[in-house]
Image (tube, rainbow, N blue to C red; front, top):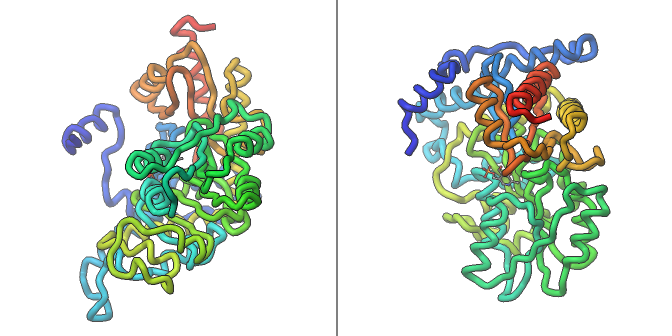
Length: 425
Ligand SMILES: Cc1ncc(COP(=O)(O)O)c(C=O)c1O
């Protein structure tokens, strides 16, 4: 069970700064846009100041959860301070998300993702959104969902549950490891489609390998066969620029707490139009869930939830817009390409892809005989460098814009040191 005292004790033992609300609230001005042109390194270093992550910590794992920067924390704290006064203007106004439409929070995020407010429901995480899809999509006994063999548990398990309870069939295709190009993936999907396939459910960005799947082509393939396409985009918002209506998919889910650094407890469900909504029942419901005129917000009628969470989301979207998603994506990718290439020079196998078009900002590499868990523990406990990966020897290296090349070089130097220590040449 989570124990606050031992958690704080652990943080102190690891030499980490203790959380201090005042520190979070201290506003540091954002760098001006022209600084990027004059001195790019200074620009990103100034943005690094927005994060409470101590200067000597290198965090190569926002793939699990991001860290909310000062503007987001300020919006959340301010949100609590104002909303908890309970002085809302109308006698029926209360600070709860879960009964109203909350367009003021949905619209900026919908715009950011290339969708309309009517297509966008804000939920509490990607797991919840995936569960809405697997639980709610109209299917008959024996109908098939086609997914990859690399889905995250939060994408796969909702469908496995549906299979066990209601007899739909989960079919999987094997992702190439690594994929040579987009056709390598598309051919496998095409070959796995059967007359019973009703929906293709795949990650937009694979959690295990970081491969960015060719979402637009997959959506077009599905449409050409009369099948719905659904993407688990947990890693996409804030990592790469996403234009949902341009992708042309039917359903898309995601998390904003990872790469967008929004409040923990923010996820979303996108549904292309009312025809798709008519085929997806809601799961957590209160009054209004079956009112089609509400469009996507009928999936948000979930009972009392936390409005300052949404305020933090707006601040996170605002920060990404202020920097510019093109700029963020280019930086994220540049750092990932750098770490990927450096690991290749060290004899690693790429589990992402040799094709840069299929890579985003997660570089997964296989480095046998290095034991991932041993390296991961050593890096964090002794050197304040955070990575993650898979058994036995895969390292998942996530490179958000706030990292510097010097941070990555620090990891690389430690990786070399670890191998030397273990006698691995
Ligand atoms: C592909 C994918 N889907 C879903 C999830 C679950 O996200 P959340 O914890 O926001 O529900 C993750 C988390 O890492 C993921 O990588």
